Image 1 (cartoon, helix red, strand yellow):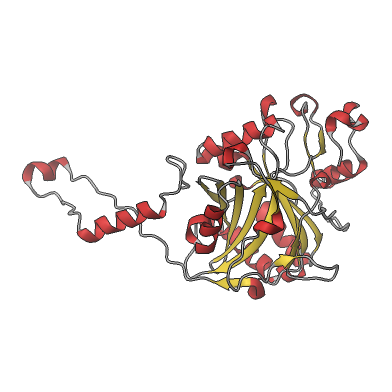
Image 2 (image 1 turned 180 degrees about the vertical axis):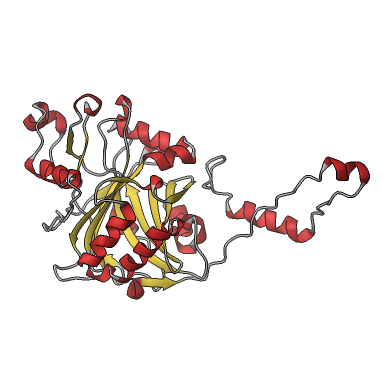
Length: 359
């Protein structure tokens, strides 16, 4: 892909044929891209000044491994299945620097975050905040504290949690607009995050019933602010941002997601994520992260995980003024068990920054 400042097409305001083709398909409600995604070459990631001493490491060298859970792997051959591939962000047009005036989109520069791996966990209860709930991931993030991560969880029917783990490879300061918008996302409230987090699906190969399910899931096969369709939960840690997308928050979407999960082994699709830019100091947009999944059989790659959700925080109700005056109001006594529950909650979330916990 080219850099916008040095590209004659971008200086003239013209879009590449590929970008126009994708834009047209989205506008018409189509997204049946039969061309395979462009795979990325092997790359390295740099830790930045915000996360310790600078050094370069291959993404493969910081792979998150979970015992019995590495079946979903990096693609090794053309006919490989149950795999993922890193793809070129230039395949997808995003808002340009002057979008507020000319409404034009251009191929994205390289994504700011690169996929480390995908994993699927099967639990008895819905699992929120995987960075804390999954022991191996919590340890991994602590051991790689000099790197910055973006985690996207899909909470799907049957208590499955699909985890997409991305690591930042864009050095801080290289793209001030992206850094500015990411900082707003990190420091903003849940309403801001839900209104800006955008999901882009590109289906390259899939049975017709699955395509119909994705349309039901998103409304149309085009970029979508996922927080407008589904409940999202956000968690901000010392070196990560985590977004949880709850497909069960809509009965229609929940049913469609069930079909999608069962038919996933027949799908080749790219999933892309970004934070939508709306102000001049947030443009041009840059892809947050993206990858392509190829014929993944969820029952095969899922990991049985023993997860128990933390108890709810203790909430005391105030007795009525009538009860307070005449001694008939209900009084809530804090038992030792209640105090232990609160203490357990505090220890579970001790690594989450104050006032940024998801809800």
